[in-house]
Image (tube, rainbow, N blue to C red):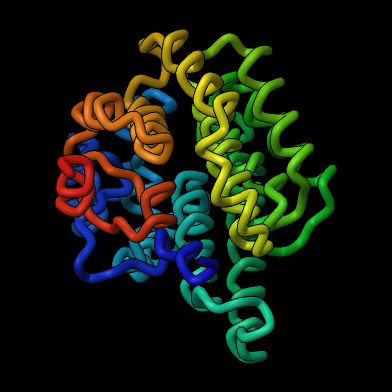
Length: 316
């Protein structure tokens, strides 16, 4: 199971997953980057909504094919906070690729060193981006994942999370990065992860953050799998209380305008959880809202790695 955890950044030829969730302006920004038209890229980026900025970092920064172009960008525009932001995201991507999906004990000393070196570079780029402009929540959101890889203290990651939240209270990527930091498979525990999910969802009142309790349920099931608690894993999605929790969350969900480009995250998790609890019709209904906008997680946990496989699985 652990080998599946890194596929989001490692990539796979057969996958058609678009990390930008089909963001309509992604080709435009890719063209500007390829042409070296950095000023136009930066001006256009500044005018984006916060959710569009997140998707652009997913679609460009987490595409290893852009790493060289982003390095050139930083060299040409050393005082551009946006160039440093994307460089930080890119180096983080390369770090996880270098690490591979092997268990920690199986990662070679050389690859482990590459991993940490690249994360240190990512940290430096993001820190410089923050110095140049402390008003972009993306910087702080992306720093949390770097903190996770570098095994930073909880307080350090939490400080970046709070900085992102001050700028954008319902910044989904920042919340997902922080709940991952609190995930028992990384730096936290089930209780920390679950408390964070319920608290943040309740405090913000943002429907977009329903993703957090859905994520928490998914990762609790995965935790039992990783820890070889076979009975708990087998019974988890059969539990009437778990089924009721998911149904109640779905009944209370309403789409909102703020952060609307990230709504596919919500439906990916709902569809996955309905599928796992045997609610096939609800799984198909929610999946209809994400056609072509499948996310890597949580589907990779059950071996579904592209949009075609997802549609075929839900038709059964």
